[in-house]
Image 1: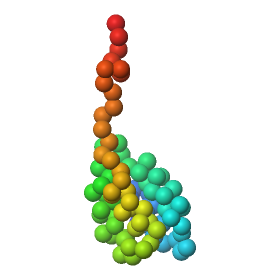
Image 2: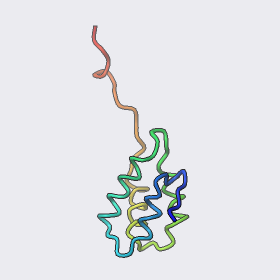
Image 3: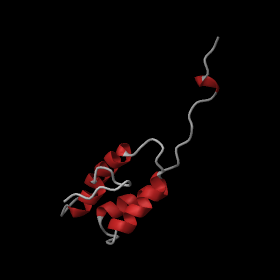
Length: 89
């Protein structure tokens, strides 16, 4: 039975931890799909921390590695635009 939570709306992270022999590159693909499935206003850092607390009991699991890397390398999205994005009259 797939477990779905607000932090993992499709159950992708849950399933990744259940796949025996999963590789780090496969986990990265799953992570990207997970990130794209979150709402636009979702803050990914707290969600990643909660997912690690819930599923990441094995720090050597490739998904744990990917989530930890995400915590340290993903920047908080900033508003894009500026003077170039303004309409000219």
